Image (cartoon, rainbow over all chains, first blue to last red; front, side, top):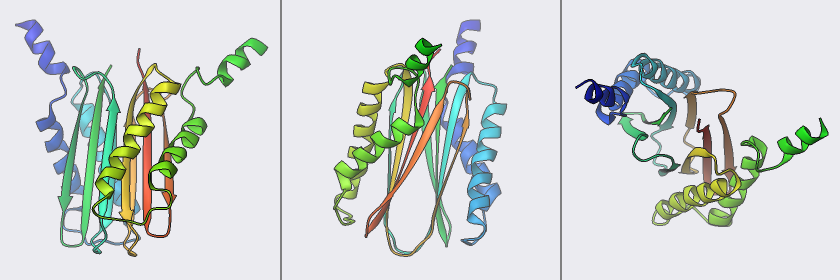
Length: 113
Length: 117
C-alpha cells in the first residue's frame, strides 16, 4: 500500500496540473482587456503563479512553464512542441484560454528527478 | 588547466546556449526560410521545426532531456508576448530562445535542456 501511495505522489497528473494552470490564468488576466503596456507583466505573472503552485505540490519534478499571450487581431498562430525524455515518468499539459480580446496558451512540462 | 579548458570547449561537454542558438537558426531557415505564411502549411512547419531541432540537439549532447517549443505567427500587426519560467537545477540545466522573422511571419523557438542525474 505504501508503494502505491508513493507512485501517486511521484506521478505527473495532467488533471491536477491543468487545474493549477486554469486558476493561475484566471487570477492573472481573467476579465482584463489586451493592453500592450501590461502584457509583459501578465505573462510573467501567469508563469510565476503556475510555478509556485506546482512547486507547492511537493512532487519530485523539475518544471518548465511557458506562456503565450496573443491579441485577437485575425492573425494565425500555430504552436508545437517536441520532447526527448522518459515517457514513463515525465509529462506535459497545455491549456488554451481566451476572452474577448486575447488568447493565452500555457504549457507545463514536468521532468522527474 | 589547459586540459580542462579543452573539455569545456568541446561540444561533447555540457549544453551550450550559443551553440544551440546556431543549431536552431539553421533548422528554422531550412524549414521556413523564403516561405510566406500559409495556413495550410503552418502545421507541417512547426512540427518539422521542433523535430529537426530535437534531432540535432540529441546528436550534439545525448545526455540531456530536451523540450523544444515553436510558435509561428502571421504578421498582421497584432501583439504577441511569450514568457518562460523554469524550476530546475540552475547549475546543470539551460535554455535558449531564438526569435526569427521574415516578411510575413514570426517564429519563436525555445529549447530547454535538463540534465539527467
